[in-house]
Image (cartoon, rainbow, N blue to C red; front, side, top):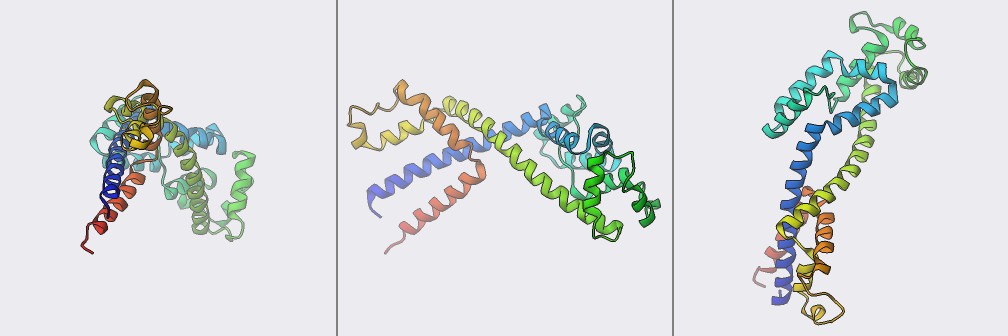
Length: 258
């Protein structure tokens, strides 16, 4: 490996390590903010309201099984997240995540009655129950189709459907979170002086010699450099950890005697 290439890899590794450290900090801050404001919980509640209507969504969220599971999950959180979530609970924020199994049991309880009295006849009778919204009856009818009205098979169908639905919701939530991550990353980059453009120009003497390109540290490069750093940080800690691992492996392979 030539000295120039080794220097370039070292600079890139330093930048990537900086992105990774800032991304970890941003993810922690955003998670604490999400717990305090209940943003993830409110996103889930609005989605359930859209799917099932306010009344049925509220009954599902208030189901003792889901409430108990949420309390157990809260105990597993790191202390900063746990404190933030407990504080959010005082503002009557609903649960932020529901296990597919718990959701299926809660929905079946609301649609078909308690498990101890649930049978095929009751399921057939309640398929068209007026107590449920029409679109919910249509959804249950689609999920029940082909199960021979077997409660266990219906539960599996509901779990699979809810798991796929939550994956789509998580993707939408993640896209919005990346916008907030870019904003927070830009602010942190400005605070720590992580200017990607300035670093690139500093290690590109040929480019810096051109009068048409601003010199590192000027006001022209600072804020665009911070914004670029924020966009890089918004890619997430896991992404930059993988990149840093690959760069480390590349440096190790290049340093081996040939």
